[in-house]
Amino acid sequence: MLPTSHNTQQVKRINVEIVKNTLRSMGVGTKASIANLTKLSVATCGTILNELLQTGEIIDLGPDESSGGRPASRYQFNADYASVLCLIIRTEGGIHSITHTYANLNGEMADEQTLILDEINVSVVEELIAELIAQHHNVQAIGIGIPGVALNGVIGICDVPELANQPLGLRLKEQYEDIEVVIGNDMNLTVYGLYNEQQFEEEKNFAVVTFPENHFPGAGFIIDGRPLTGNTQFGGEVSFLPFGVSREEQLRMLKTKEGLQELVVQTLVSIIAIINPAVIVVTGDTMDPAMRNGLIQGCLNHHIPQEHMPELMIRRDTRREYVTGLIAVTLESLTYRIQVVEKQW
Image (tube, rainbow, N blue to C red; front, top):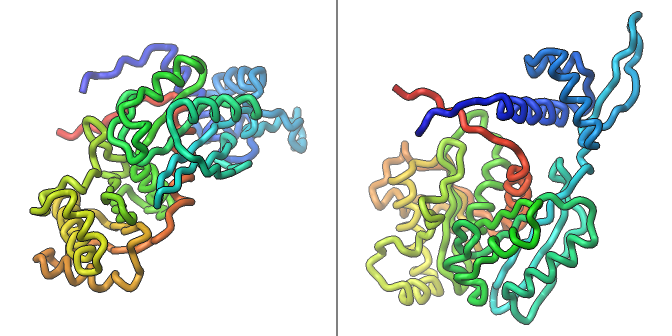
């Protein structure tokens, strides 16, 4: 990785993010308390707070209670300054749907609705987004979850045939130049939501694998606290593992209890041997919590040592975690980030 040069503008943008995030976590703060927590100078914090007041990103709540001197102004992060629009596109059991919701800058959702549609194509998605943006205040980012893969704004493999190989992200960026656009794989977004739910004390390896009815399985991974998507966003397409049967045969096996058990165990063994996760969550409407002990024993029978077995959880319904993962990723697209890499050698 090339070394990063921190110019003045980069440093300022980083400091602004630090102040905003600190104030968001504090709830209410003064210039001095923010400076104390951020380790920035009081003068730097004052300049940033004045700029954020002018844009409306924070709110001045008035003076604090006086302790003898001049009372300090109290500030609050304005979570309603802007919003993000999130869409989840699904096709399940022949039913096509789009669930849409808004979230403020604290990730608090509002106006969630689900539309059942005869078909979903690029025009349908574009028209819906245009309608929703017109209805809501200051949308700064659009997040779209799909049952497929997207790279650089172009959808590739997708369970919604009309969206496959379509440059949906590029088209939306042309229409909304000032709005960030994120298109994510459903499993990667779900794993991000589930991982955040665990509240680990330190970063872990984590996996989610899903076995939906009448569809190929998929997976999502977190490695040392970071989402793993792969070089071309293909990471997690576990139906391409060398099971020794064709993909068509996989679908037939998934319809029987014995075949499902065999494929789930082989998938779990592969994941455990490659990334050694702390937790694997198995999801999908083909799964039953009663299968847990059998799956654990199946992994042990495939010579996974007991001490390397992750915690295994079965969750049939992860829709809420999918939404929260999409909102989190969409909000992150609005932040200015610069990567700092710890020296390894």
